[in-house]
Image (cartoon, rainbow, N blue to C red; front, side, top):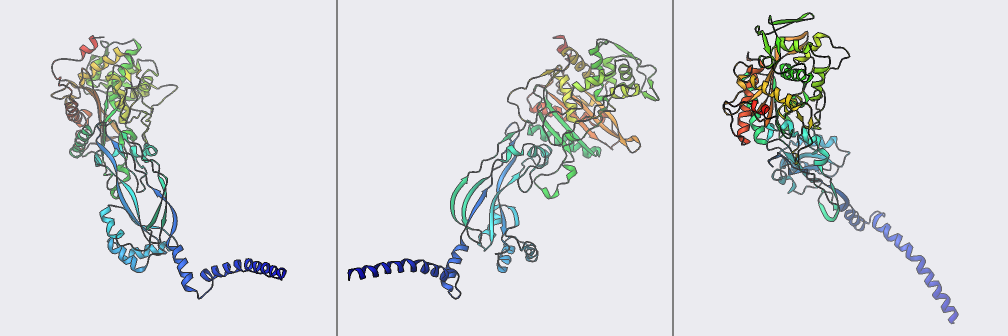
Length: 566
């Protein structure tokens, strides 16, 4: 009997083991597969659809851009972007969403139809939280709210060409925003969440990787000087009806860019109205023939040969000189004049005769050492190198025209950098758009004594009898050089289109700043550098030196004392 009972118990256990898996399969089928079992099937399907595990991007905060004194130039503000899942949102949801965002219901439906096969579509980007709130508070099924950051530029168009701007995805597009995009952008984070089909987060499962904010950047520009330069340039553009213009101001000691403005400009806070042609930082991307502003460098090259001294004279009689088939004229016959007078009067005859008397390549090599035809090293996107010709054999006409600023092209920044070398007693430092904590190493490009002799000659240009008396200010002694260059047209140099330039330094006896002013195609009838550009230089320089707390020094003193100290 006990043997039979044991047999049946064994059989019962085997039956139970066999039936349990079958029962489990039947139950699963009952809940998920078998038709007609709506209660179990709908419950599990609803629970599965209502909760979806997702990895969500955490946008990184973009670094701040400020001026040298900490004034904000670019800052990110939190915004909300509204998106929808076209496959989930209901017709009533579309209507409610359109009304909440003041959108056309028909336009929104057309867009949804276009994205009908997608699961994600933006409806509105980067709304201020108070504008997004009416839509997010409705909890419409299929509507998703994303937290993003939008760039704001407090200085607007005043610093636009330097700072640049970002696109709607917060990626740098122009200026320093583009140049330093990787550093400013930071690294996005990732968090794991459970979302329902409305896009709402049901549960936060924690951060997988925290967002790393971008680095902050402090530029070299001084926003106070930037506003000054921008105001004066804009006023000059209006009064002279010019096509465009630029102003660059450099710190003589450090090589830092204190101000850089252009016209026309644009408002980076209103991207819809940005014209691509207005986004160029003309001071760094556009080139000009510098004209007579390079004549002092030709004289500097002559002094360096040892064949000339500041007292050496050039015979400009009878007021013109013929080079090949071309005749160069002075406004009048200056007769026999020294090198300083050649610069003061901007004598074409004197500078041509001087250049033709020098060994080949001497002038060209001087221009090269001053930075022409080379990058300034700022790393700014689209910066032009300019053009500095290099020939195996120079024809006399090429030698003469190069000496007074034709046949080469430079950017306003390159021209400013070359004048810094003169203002800094022949020493050159790299130009920088970033604030420097320490002075970079200097390179002695030209002998200090020769550079200072040129500085003395440049002072004469702004004094009575010079070509730039309008560059003088009531409070500070100034020094510099005018330039007036014909623009190239369809059939060579145009007789009615000019670029007016002034490059100068102040205070003349101990220069702190170098400023270059370029007025492109002034049409007011006053197109000479001394008429169109020099007065702008005077206004900007006078106000800027006051803001920098530089003591006034416009008295009878001269910068000759600077040379005598050597």
